[in-house]
Length: 130
Figure 1 (cartoon, rainbow, N blue to C red):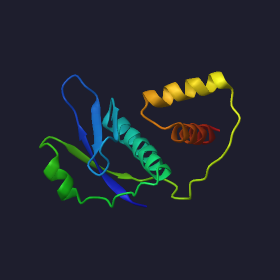
Figure 2 (figure 1 turned 120 degrees about the horizontal axis):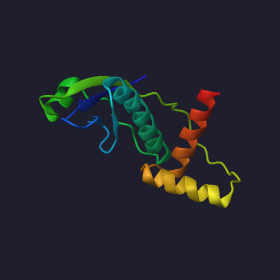
Figure 3 (figure 1 turned 30 degrees about the vertical axis):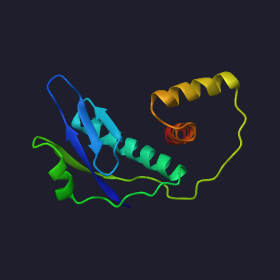
Figure 4 (figure 1 turned 60 degrees about the horizontal axis):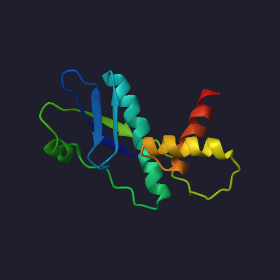
Protein backbone atom coordinates (compact mmCIF):
# COMPACT_ATOMS: atom_id res chain seq x y z
CA UNK A 1 0.00 0.00 0.00
CA UNK A 2 1.22 3.48 -0.90
CA UNK A 3 1.14 6.42 1.53
CA UNK A 4 0.73 10.01 0.38
CA UNK A 5 1.59 13.15 2.32
CA UNK A 6 -1.41 15.26 3.26
CA UNK A 7 -0.94 18.92 4.16
CA UNK A 8 -3.25 20.10 6.92
CA UNK A 9 -3.83 23.80 7.52
CA UNK A 10 -6.14 25.76 9.80
CA UNK A 11 -6.95 29.43 10.00
CA UNK A 12 -8.80 31.05 12.87
CA UNK A 13 -12.53 30.42 12.66
CA UNK A 14 -12.26 27.63 10.08
CA UNK A 15 -12.12 23.86 10.00
CA UNK A 16 -8.90 22.00 9.30
CA UNK A 17 -8.32 21.90 5.54
CA UNK A 18 -6.50 19.01 3.88
CA UNK A 19 -4.83 18.90 0.48
CA UNK A 20 -2.50 16.57 -1.38
CA UNK A 21 0.55 17.81 -3.30
CA UNK A 22 0.43 14.71 -5.54
CA UNK A 23 -3.29 15.11 -6.34
CA UNK A 24 -4.25 18.71 -7.18
CA UNK A 25 -7.95 19.16 -6.57
CA UNK A 26 -8.14 16.41 -3.96
CA UNK A 27 -9.17 18.27 -0.82
CA UNK A 28 -10.98 17.51 2.39
CA UNK A 29 -11.70 19.06 5.78
CA UNK A 30 -12.69 18.30 9.34
CA UNK A 31 -13.60 20.02 12.58
CA UNK A 32 -10.80 18.21 14.43
CA UNK A 33 -7.41 16.92 13.32
CA UNK A 34 -8.69 13.36 13.70
CA UNK A 35 -11.76 14.04 11.59
CA UNK A 36 -9.65 15.84 8.99
CA UNK A 37 -7.28 12.85 8.76
CA UNK A 38 -10.16 10.38 8.45
CA UNK A 39 -11.88 12.49 5.79
CA UNK A 40 -8.56 12.82 3.95
CA UNK A 41 -8.30 9.04 3.71
CA UNK A 42 -11.76 8.81 2.14
CA UNK A 43 -11.12 11.76 -0.21
CA UNK A 44 -7.83 10.26 -1.40
CA UNK A 45 -9.41 6.86 -2.06
CA UNK A 46 -12.28 8.40 -4.03
CA UNK A 47 -9.93 10.62 -6.00
CA UNK A 48 -7.70 7.70 -6.95
CA UNK A 49 -10.71 5.55 -7.85
CA UNK A 50 -11.91 8.32 -10.19
CA UNK A 51 -8.47 8.52 -11.80
CA UNK A 52 -8.39 4.77 -12.29
CA UNK A 53 -11.87 4.86 -13.79
CA UNK A 54 -10.66 7.53 -16.22
CA UNK A 55 -7.59 5.40 -16.96
CA UNK A 56 -5.26 8.09 -15.62
CA UNK A 57 -1.91 7.11 -14.15
CA UNK A 58 -1.48 7.32 -10.39
CA UNK A 59 1.61 9.31 -9.34
CA UNK A 60 4.29 7.92 -7.08
CA UNK A 61 4.16 9.52 -3.62
CA UNK A 62 6.33 12.62 -3.27
CA UNK A 63 8.91 12.75 -0.53
CA UNK A 64 7.96 14.66 2.61
CA UNK A 65 10.68 17.22 1.89
CA UNK A 66 9.19 17.99 -1.53
CA UNK A 67 5.74 18.52 -0.04
CA UNK A 68 7.14 20.72 2.75
CA UNK A 69 8.89 22.96 0.21
CA UNK A 70 5.53 23.75 -1.41
CA UNK A 71 3.44 24.15 1.75
CA UNK A 72 3.25 26.94 4.29
CA UNK A 73 5.38 27.07 7.40
CA UNK A 74 2.48 26.46 9.80
CA UNK A 75 1.22 23.33 8.05
CA UNK A 76 0.89 19.93 9.70
CA UNK A 77 1.60 16.79 7.69
CA UNK A 78 0.09 13.33 7.79
CA UNK A 79 0.78 10.15 5.87
CA UNK A 80 -2.48 8.92 4.37
CA UNK A 81 -2.81 5.39 3.00
CA UNK A 82 -4.10 5.03 -0.53
CA UNK A 83 -6.78 2.59 0.58
CA UNK A 84 -7.93 1.66 -2.91
CA UNK A 85 -8.59 -1.64 -4.54
CA UNK A 86 -6.38 -1.57 -7.58
CA UNK A 87 -8.44 -4.17 -9.38
CA UNK A 88 -9.60 -3.75 -12.93
CA UNK A 89 -12.53 -1.41 -13.50
CA UNK A 90 -15.40 -3.05 -15.35
CA UNK A 91 -18.44 -1.57 -17.03
CA UNK A 92 -21.80 -2.75 -15.69
CA UNK A 93 -25.38 -2.14 -16.72
CA UNK A 94 -27.86 -1.44 -13.91
CA UNK A 95 -31.52 -0.59 -13.72
CA UNK A 96 -32.42 2.37 -11.50
CA UNK A 97 -35.43 4.62 -11.01
CA UNK A 98 -35.06 7.74 -13.18
CA UNK A 99 -35.88 10.14 -10.32
CA UNK A 100 -33.32 8.48 -8.08
CA UNK A 101 -30.75 8.68 -10.86
CA UNK A 102 -31.38 12.43 -11.19
CA UNK A 103 -30.76 12.81 -7.45
CA UNK A 104 -27.59 10.70 -7.68
CA UNK A 105 -26.31 12.81 -10.58
CA UNK A 106 -27.08 16.08 -8.81
CA UNK A 107 -25.50 14.96 -5.54
CA UNK A 108 -22.41 13.50 -7.20
CA UNK A 109 -21.98 16.70 -9.27
CA UNK A 110 -22.16 18.78 -6.09
CA UNK A 111 -19.39 16.61 -4.63
CA UNK A 112 -17.33 16.88 -7.79
CA UNK A 113 -17.54 13.14 -8.34
CA UNK A 114 -18.41 11.03 -11.33
CA UNK A 115 -21.60 8.99 -11.08
CA UNK A 116 -19.72 5.66 -11.06
CA UNK A 117 -17.33 6.77 -8.30
CA UNK A 118 -20.24 8.02 -6.22
CA UNK A 119 -22.25 4.81 -6.62
CA UNK A 120 -19.18 2.71 -5.78
CA UNK A 121 -18.49 4.83 -2.68
CA UNK A 122 -22.14 4.60 -1.60
CA UNK A 123 -22.12 0.82 -2.04
CA UNK A 124 -18.88 0.48 -0.03
CA UNK A 125 -20.26 2.72 2.71
CA UNK A 126 -23.46 0.68 2.89
CA UNK A 127 -21.55 -2.60 3.03
CA UNK A 128 -19.21 -1.29 5.74
CA UNK A 129 -22.21 -0.32 7.87
CA UNK A 130 -23.98 -3.65 7.44
